[in-house]
Image (cartoon, rainbow, N blue to C red):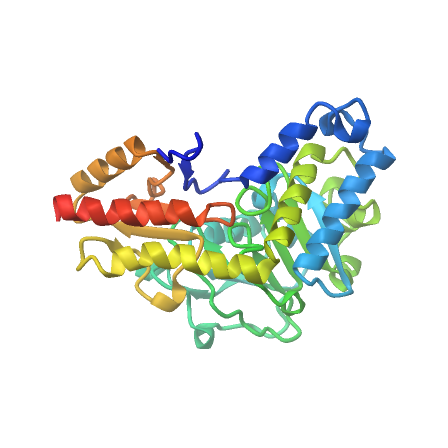
Length: 367
């Protein structure tokens, strides 16, 4: 266990680590927020005090991601999984088709939700037959003209792959599920018609879903769908049509201030590069004792580092010893097995150094 404090080395894939200063700030304000005599969780979402929290979080996100004019920020519920349904319901007009790039389990689920709705879809590219060991090359995309949109998953938590470069889709809106790498590196928002992300990896606790949506797409969205599933309704009401997850949004705002204090997204990216490289070096320099799931190094994720050991018995022993050393969340996803270190923004460099050292020592003992 890390001896400098009583907190675990948290490599959970989500809900994931939160910055300690954020937790301490929330703890300090928990009972009496800004001399209101109430917790943020007790404030009316119609109160001026809460609306200040709400709007500040929106402005911080715009600033950190350099979101240009012509985009709206929404705070929704239902996780990224609800967006799998909301996107085709709002944007897939009758007679149109939407493209999906398959790079892992979550992109498969996004496509499945659209097909459940009997909407017209097609697979623009896929690496499923290769067990999702890489991201498709941009030259592999088969994009149909007139598509309603192209959907991608920017980072794949289960398999450990991430888009290094995004496709240029021209007039066709590019929609990205960035749940597991939003705010981990700079991104040109203007390339996208929509970005969405569950908060529980890099933005805050579970319960909030951030949607960054181009205004013209909101104007074109369908209105013949249930009210709570309409982007235009949420936009018109500043995400306050019904009671939002107020505490989650407050926490999200604190995380954004923490990123700002670190030096912004560019500083966070440099930190994430350093953290990931520590663990990838342990894999690459192990002479095959550790093998990464992702075969193409350009497709490697900075957020989710997946690897196997020579046998399942050794993996079981590795995970058992890691747990005893205070490491949490290193089990690979049940669908693929092996090991996974999720080094999200709030995971400190020291945790990745400790894991690197543990991996080297384990190899010496068992290699």
